[in-house]
Amino acid sequence: MGHELYQPAVEALGTLLRENCELEATAAARINQIMAELAAIARVPCLPLFDPVERIKDGFLYFKREKYDADPELYSALAEGQEPKFLVLACSDSRVSPSHVLNFQPGEAFMLRNIANIVPPYDKVKYSGVGAVIEYAVVHLKVENIVVMGHSRCGGIKALMDLPEDGTASNDFIDEWVKICWPARVKVKTELPCASTDEQITACEKVISHSAQTHNINNNFFSRVI
Image 1: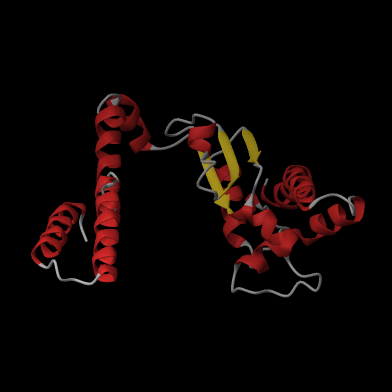
Image 2: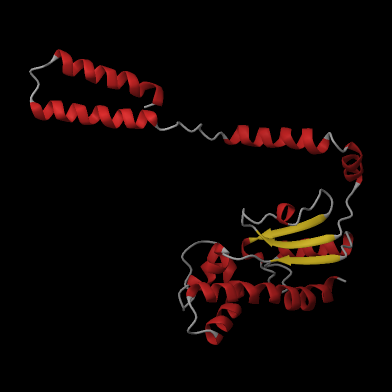
C-alpha cells in the first residue's frame, strides 16, 4: 500500500467506529490498534524506488557533461589509441574501484579485476584470461608500472579461509577459483594456528598480494611474454 493511501484508510476505520457503536470492545480495540499502526507508517518518509536504468542513464549523462564535454581534446586523443602507464591487478569488490581509490583518469591504467585479485600460476589454457591481460599490457601496450592492489575484508579470501579442510566445493565457480591460493591458506594456518579468523584472513590477504607481485607475475608470466 502506498503512503498516500494510509491516511484515507485511517479515516475510513475511524468512520467505521463512529457509525458502529455496537461493535464489541475487542473488535473496537483491534480497529484502534490498526489505526495507530497505519498512522505511524504514514509518518515514515517514503524513499523513492531505485531505478537501475535511470541510474545508468544519469551516470552517463553526468560523465558526458562533466568529463567528456569538458575535455574534448583528451577524448579525441584516446579515440586514436591508449598508452597507459599502469597495469593494475585488483579485486572485483565494488568498494575498491582502482579508478576511484587511485584517482586514475581515462587512458592511465589498463586493468584486470577478479575475485581476490588472484594472479594464478602460468597456464596457457586454464587461466588464459589473466595471462592475456598481462601479456597485452606488457608486450603490446608496454606499460611501465604494475600495481597489485589488495584490500582488507576481502570476501574472496574469506571464502578461501572458510573452505572445509578437504577442499570440498559448495558452488560451481567461486571455490575452485579461490582454491588457486590454497598454499597461502596452508601457510597462514600453519604459521598462525592460534590466531583469530579475522587475523588469519588479514594475513592471507597479505600473502596472496605478495605472491602475486613476487612470484606469479615475475617468475611465471614475464619470463615467457617478454
